[in-house]
Length: 154
Image 1 (tube, rainbow, N blue to C red):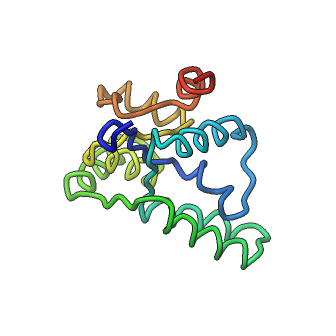
Image 2: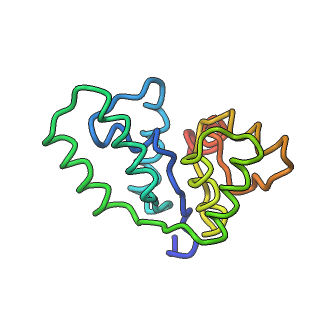
C-alpha cells in the first residue's frame, strides 16, 4: 500500500496511556488492531502536545515507574508523528467549549484532527453526542466500536 493510501489517525489519549505504563480497561482489542494496522503499514499514528499533557496529568495522580514513563514517552516521540494544532483549531475548540462541552483537551484533539485532515480514534461517546447535537462535522471521527467492527477481522 502506498504512503498516500495509509490511514492517518490521531489517537485519543486513551490509546497512548498504556505506552507509558497506565492500564486502561477494555482497550486490549483496539490496541491489537492498531498494532496490526501499523505492522502492515496501513496506518500512521499521530499525537499532539495535548495528548502528552493529558497523559502526564493522569500519571501524576497514580503511582508510576519513572523508567517506564520515560521509555514510553521516547517511544511516542520516535514511533508516532506529532500533529500541531492550527489557529483555526484553537478558535473552534474555544467556541465549542463556550457552547457547553467541559473537556477542552478533547475538543483540542478533535479540532486538531479536523483542521489537519486526520482521522480521530476515540471511545468518547459524550464528545461525539455533543458534536452531533451541535451539528458539527463528525466525518473525521472513528468511534472505537466502529473501528473494531471494520478492522478487527481484516
